[in-house]
Length: 123
Image (cartoon, rainbow, N blue to C red; front, side):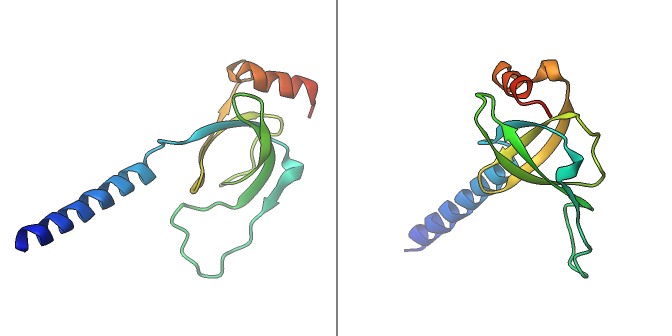
């Protein structure tokens, strides 16, 4: 009986560790690409004493973004500063967690399908 209990506890601990590792890694994430449009930016108000563990995200952007195949959707993410107007960015997005990070990229670093979308739909 003790062996079954210890085996069960061990299985639960291993499963919990695997879930933690998966959720902290970027496994399962997708890159989306967008162009900064500061008219789509909103300054975020203070959260009234709520602790923000992710740092100070004073700005919220909702931008139409494209995956590497050119399929698009609106994505909302936070930034600690106002981003450079017209800059291209790559968003790392996970299904449940949302945007993990963003990084400014050059136009020639965009996938071809994404370049087509931006050349067909000017800012």
